[in-house]
Length: 126
Image (cartoon, rainbow, N blue to C red; front, side, top):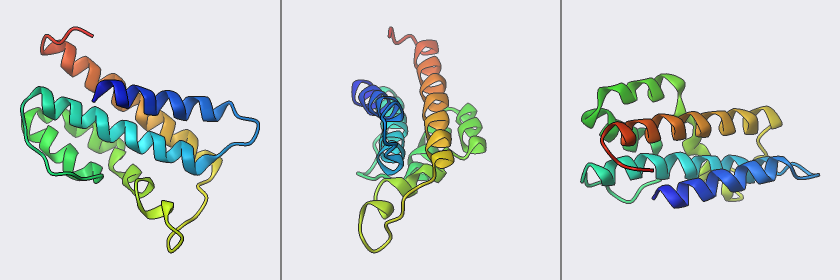
């Protein structure tokens, strides 16, 4: 899960350096990274979760294990869920702004740092 999360975040960062900024793809990869960082934490704690892209649902499971994850809720990482499915299909498609893409990168980076720190605290060597 961590490797895939890292790859999603790397992809989002690479896309920010593109001559033509593809903000919807950046936001999608940020959502995917956050989702997978949370799933990595849940897997580490052997907590089952259903197949979902809904960050709020995954975050609640993480909070149930470690209340400090409420800090991520306060950052509103759950707002990234819209980029998983909704904007990828013609009915609800829109192009996020550059500001939205920058915020998505920021939230993904903060989530990465937070989750990795918690995993290291639990003894996982990264």
